[in-house]
Amino acid sequence: MVILTVVLGNEKMEGRILKRMHERMIKNFMDIIIMAELLKSPLSGYDVISYIHSKFNLLVSSGTVYSLLYSLERNELVEGTWDEKKRIYRLTDKGKKTIETILNANDKIKIFVANILNL
Image 1 (cartoon, rainbow, N blue to C red):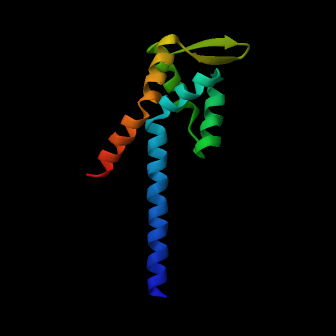
Image 2: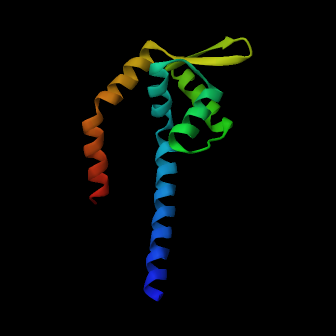
Image 3: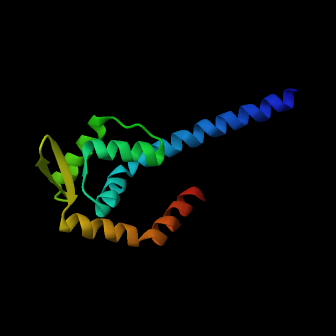
């Protein structure tokens, strides 16, 4: 009985740790996630929030998403235009080149992450 409790306790702790790591990774790479999705089609800020929630089961605040979109816009990676009552974001040419470079470096990124985890 005690062994079962310890095992279940470790599974719960492992689940919490993995959940926090998942959230942290999504938040840290949210700019790349947004740009990769914008490569497929233009999105509003609300669309980005919905996408992240449905794809990663993570609810992010509108302040987080819009702040990031404005930052991407200031860096000329995305362009926002008004469409009726909402702002629609599209990748600029600079944004397309940037995200394509990142996505093409997939193997290098995997090796980098593996090296980090093999301290």
